[in-house]
Length: 67
Ligand code: SF4
Image 1 (cartoon, helix red, strand yellow):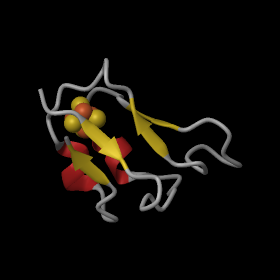
Image 2 (spheres, helix red, strand yellow):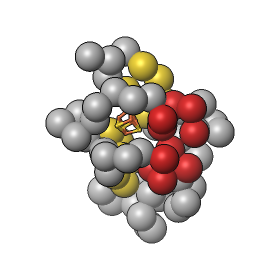
Image 3 (tube, rainbow, N blue to C red):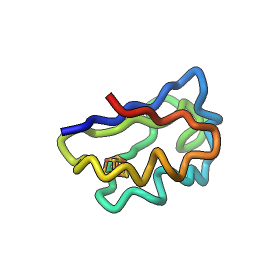
Image 4 (cartoon, rainbow, N blue to C red):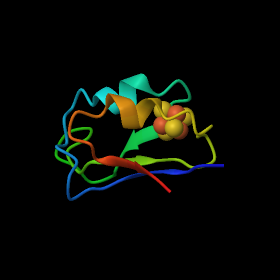
């Protein structure tokens, strides 16, 4: 199955992350340690991800890539 990855050097750390909102599995979560939820970026929980690709299509910064 395709797995998805969020490049934290590209992620704009939006508190309203469109990719997170687009994920039907709740697989995109904030990285711990941010000053606000998402302030340190986001990551994909692989165990929850079904590989649908919605996050990659939704991210305006194109921070999500498939592997
Ligand atoms: S590929 Fe689909 S299920 Fe996986 S993190 Fe992206 S939106 Fe969520």
